[in-house]
Image (cartoon, helix red, strand yellow):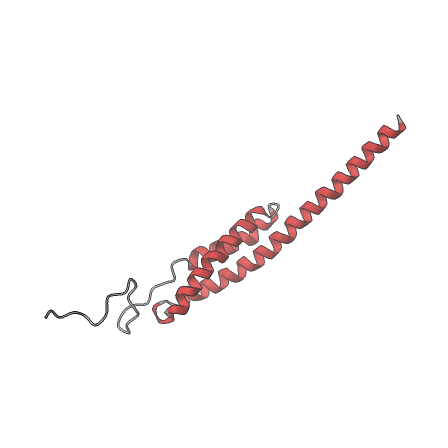
Amino acid sequence: MENQPPYQQPYQQPYSPGSQQMPLPNATAVLVLGIISIVGCICYGIPGLICSIIALVLAKKDLQLYANNPEAYTMASYSNLKSGRICAIIGLSLSALFFLFIIIYFIFVGSLVLSSHNGIFNHM
């Protein structure tokens, strides 16, 4: 009988104390997208919304990775991930408020323009 390992190799090897820690795969991207989402809120809110949603999706995936095996990842990358997630939440909030403000503004200005045109046509 052949020597068979007691278990099959999993697709991701568990952390062993002798191995080096690695950064979370999307921590830097989440931080950059979170910062861009705050800055992008002034461009009618659309770029900020897009960047913040992407950052939050990537952060959720990395938080699951970290929760499954926290010893395998560096604390610096985890800190970047948390900071980027907070920036993305702030960017999402600001962008949504600004986008809502722009919509209300255009509705208000549009109604003023339409009411002024109706007044001009009524006088003729």
